[in-house]
Image 1 (cartoon, rainbow, N blue to C red):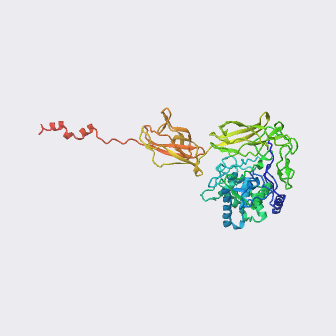
Image 2 (cartoon, helix red, strand yellow):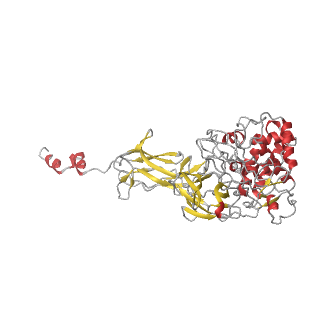
Length: 585
């Protein structure tokens, strides 16, 4: 069955006027085929979408639907007072700088577009929560990759792989990548170098912000014109709800923002793919508490919740406002509480944490429920501290969040199971995946020839450096083999070799791994008695390959004359010759 989805949790709501104006303007723009498809089915095409990147910048991937507070944020000159609503107006320093620099670049190159940096901030908010609250390094690159779900047609667009996994690590389907969530095919067309480092990286906020600005300005749009503004936003993600959400944040940020340190931005918690049954192929619960369909959010009929007149809901307290407050005895089922894709590289921590909510039959949040999280499958991934299973008690909002999940050294898929103790029927399985670290290039760190005499030890050890997209590739698995020829990669049975633990020749080494600086240094090599030119081939996970030439030279001939050579070469000086010459004199 499809997962049972918890309630929408928002930090605030947007005015009815904004939503109404957005819908009215959409109708006025007459974008053909655009309907309020939400996320539960295929989206219709939007007019004026920049070719040739497909139907949208993001492939209509999921997005955060949290809305800004009703109250205006504090003015830019006033510091936040620590309140939750003021915190929403805080933009991480590096992220804010990237948006403003993108605006400045477009003011110079495309002045007729009139791109406001607040529009980039609004899109950055709904796409990635401002790069996960500004979790970027000094160059603006995300500390952890930000990936959307596989676009496999199950609730999303179906986009088969276009980049061989180069950007998203997925060689089957494409995924949206980075803080502005570009799909690889769109990035191939619109990617830009925003920070002047010579690279176009969708995971870098400077590059992504500039690319997003150019994408929004495509086809001669003037974003100061309402119809063009709406077309631009819809070209990013073809959903009226998406349009309304972005417009809400745009209006909010225009009223004032303030800078906060990187990593201190407010994180959203409500994703569009965590609200409707059937959208996410995983997790799939074994029990659904109610067959009653859930209404579309934003219609004014959302239950549970309080409506502000603008089609937006506020969380309802446990118990529905009545006298009875749910207790653990009332729990009926678990619901996904917005858990994103669980993907990490070997040796890294998963950026997403598994989170669920305990619900009663009436849909109320149930606190103090014990939830057991278990890592299941052929994996060495563990929760922080090394545990394979942990028990967490739900908070006052019925939410339980598992500890940070740490990827081990074994690549592959596995499952994190969440279940209520003593309630076997209620369970959700979350699919997770550990990706192998990869390299796409190898190079020797030295150019010295590798030469050795028969039966001797090579003076130089082979040392190589692995990179991926020009960056250091650490922790990458590798294999080194003395191969027969450039066209035959099977192990040679003669020529140079390594020594095994028992001292015997070994011509294939497995289980190698690059160090923190991407460097791999092979053990000492030795030559047998066969002179000649030989090849050593090193191959890494990800396909990086380097073939190294090894020479075993024949010994030089000895030029010292032997005693017999001296005698035969000087017969006239021998004693016998001198003696025999006397009688004939």
